[in-house]
Length: 119
Image 1 (cartoon, helix red, strand yellow):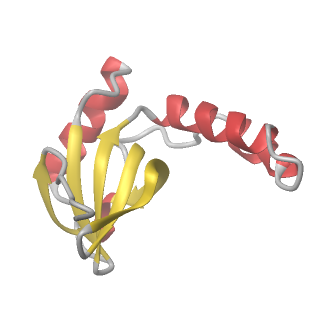
Image 2: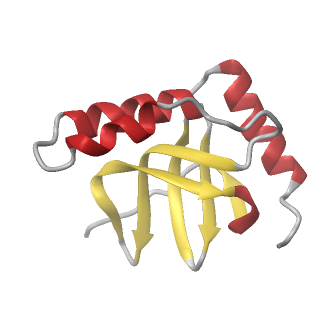
């Protein structure tokens, strides 16, 4: 397993410590381009829990996200909200999604989010 990018770990730790959701980031992982804002894991888990709880088909899975993180060390994952997978000129989903990406799996990244056009 490759060693995670220390700078990216520091950015994730800053998001976690400040409980901020204002850091925009774009990453390439597994060939996918994901762009959006980072959120602290607890905030991300809460939002996913809310979405699942509101679902008639997926409500039973909400409990898995209510549990606190077991990670006591540096962050191992990036938690995106209001995020999109960029494919061609389209961002999927249009409204933004919730993505969790292992920092060790990020092959490239840049600060800021990419714009896309559906024209």
